[in-house]
Amino acid sequence: MPQPIRLKDHEKDARLIRRRAMVGGAVIVALIMVLISRLYYLQVVQYEYHSTLSENNRVHVQPIPPNRGLIYDRNGVLIADNRPSFSLTLTRERAGDWEHVLDVIVDVLGLTADDRELFEKRVRQGRRPFEPVPVLFELNEEQIARLAINQFQLPGVDVSAQLVRHYPQGEHFAHSVGYVGRINETELKKLDPVQYSGTHHIGKTGIERYYEDQLHGEVGYEEVETNARGRVLRVLNHTDPKPGEDIVLTLDIKLQAAAEKALGGRRGAIVAIQPKTGEVLAMVSQPSFDPNPFVTGISFKAYAELRDSIDRPLFNRVLRGLYPPGSTIKPMMAIAGLDAGVVTPNSRVFDPGFYQLPNNTHKYRNWNRYGDGWVDMDTALMRSNDTYFYDLAHKLGIDRMHDYMTKFGLGQRVSLDMFEETAGLMPSRDWKRSRYRQAWYPGETLILGIGQGYMQTTPLQLAQAVSLVASKGKWIRPHLAKTVGDVPPVDENPVEDIVLRDPKYWDYARHGMEEVVNGARGTARKIGAASVYRIAGKSGTAQVVAIKQGEKYDRSKVRERHRDHALFVGFAPASDPEIAVAVMVENGESGSGVAAPVMKEVMDAWLLDENGQLKAEYAPQVAAPAVEAQTKNE
Image (cartoon, rainbow, N blue to C red; front, side):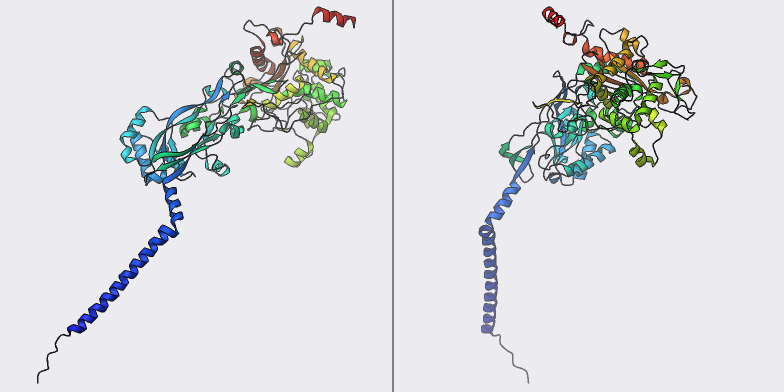
């Protein structure tokens, strides 16, 4: 029997559809309520948060770097200034694939792989978000045009004008003024990120480094509104930066040029100081270099040539060069002997051409192998007699010698504002025991008495030592800055003056130095005979390589760079010193024959007028007749 056919239940289907519609509608209503709730939460509850976030995305604070302070010589000649330069900058946040952008820059401008490596190194340095990073400086017109044509390939890349440090005097002040360079990673970690935001250079050496805080100034800022691509639409707020302070140096560009000319292209150093003020008038280290390429980034090849040069142009001989002082310390030794009471001005020593310690066969030679016979202090200084000073050193002993030489600044930093200065070495018993684990020997004291042995000094220390003799012990640290802003530099750690038992001891040593230049047998009498003013000086010859006992120095058998250094120190006018000079000529051999004429040229440039006569302000003051009469009556 066939099964009955069931008819469709329309009512049941309608109920199912209604239930599904109700459930669907409820879900939709629920979703709408969730959406409304979310909108309410975002628009009402978190309104302040999202409003601030939106504003921060639209408004950026951009730093405005301050103009770096200028540097002048004592006469107002510009030594370091800022000049406009077009630079290529890259903002990583706007560039997207910035490494590809760098590739495009190198290709468009036809640069090298080394340039590409340098660009990447600069971009990777730490910086603030949305801060443009300069990757290439000193753009020329052709490069700017090429970049403009290819701008569509260079997102985040801009050409901006900015002030860049420039040294118009070139290599003349490279070692004293120094230079600025790109801030590296190590420096970046130590700097105030706010104060140096927007600044890409910092003082690396010399005055530029020592007075970095004063030269840098204070950063300014501006709040700018930007679009989605980071392009500035308008400036909302602006605060001007405070420019760095200008610095006037004690250096004189004319004297600097005269000193360089006097050195005549030879390797060496010259320091000229005003004894009454401690002002450094000239500071020459030769050979020198042009600091300008270091500002915007010197090429690897150019730097390698400077670094690897046998003449070491990057080396500051004035502050870092360590040389045996030779006989230039004999005036200080004479003062030490007088003050310690071991000799008098009339004490005599017989010089047969050598000196021997008691019960010792070793002969310590005088430079004059034939000897000078009986010599007193005046003659010993005039003739630079080694035998006299061997005997004086033996009587003083290493302990007292160390104490007195330290008072003259040997073995310590003497400057006020010269960052790279090294301390040199004034040896002592304790130093040798610590360094070599050995006792001090009497023979070492003798050779120390003529400025040889372990003693190492810088040309600046020698200039300060002779300046102290000129000023009779008045300690003023040598300094390069005359004013910073409008304020002269202040020595926060002044050194005590050298006070002797009898002030006349200064005069005895100074008279001996005058005899060196003006005496009939003085070692530097040739420059005295040609001078219109009276000079007090002392020659020195410092060995570079030792000579065996009994052998004679033969320059023909010694390589040029192993020959003796030539030194000379002095001050003038002798009666009222206005300038003290130290000269060191590497491998110059003769202090009196080579270094002394250099010193005289420097002194002439400072003391003489255009007619070759002593300037009026330096001429001896002649008393009025009435005063003379009064003096005679007294």
